[in-house]
Length: 99
Image (cartoon, rainbow, N blue to C red; front, side, top):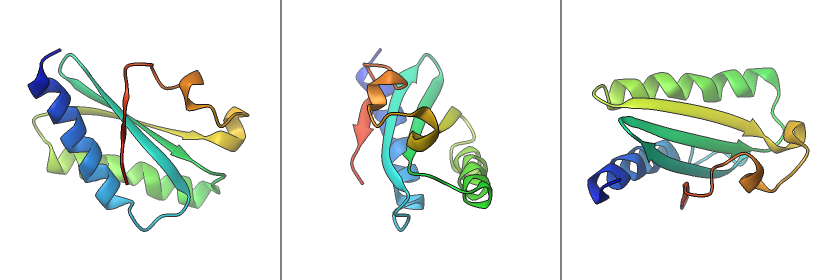
């Protein structure tokens, strides 16, 4: 992985953080570059189905903003996962994006 690859994933992660900056139900965002794909994990507190759908629509905004990048956005609800330890489902080489 090159520094450019990492900065691309982080750039997308920072953009995502800006999109959800006013949401209290998102506790953290993690990113990593995997080849040509930017992988993103959004860790959320208990959501109802409408809130989850709204967050999933953000993926469309990422695609529109970064059309030349493949973005894989995963949303994990800690209540459903049964743990607040994100390292159980976020790879160890992912980087946290400050909000």
